[in-house]
Length: 94
Image (cartoon, rainbow, N blue to C red; front, side, top):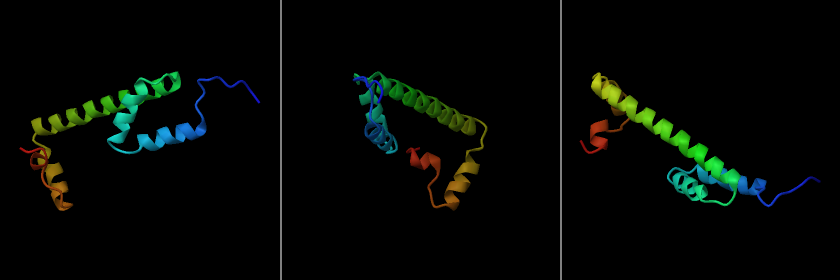
């Protein structure tokens, strides 16, 4: 019923893309792989996903640095310790 172009992506294909995007670590590899796809729709999805990832990573690092600078890291370390997780400096090898 409608015009189907060779660049159309099937629902099954998008289900696979979303599944791969939900798996930590695999998602980054899948997005980088999709950047070189012939399909424009997938390239745009990968660009958008990687852009959001970079924005959130910068915000997370900025929040960590701000907490370190203002001496509030002990609040987070106390919460982590209460849940059985080691202090942040121990997690990153400091």
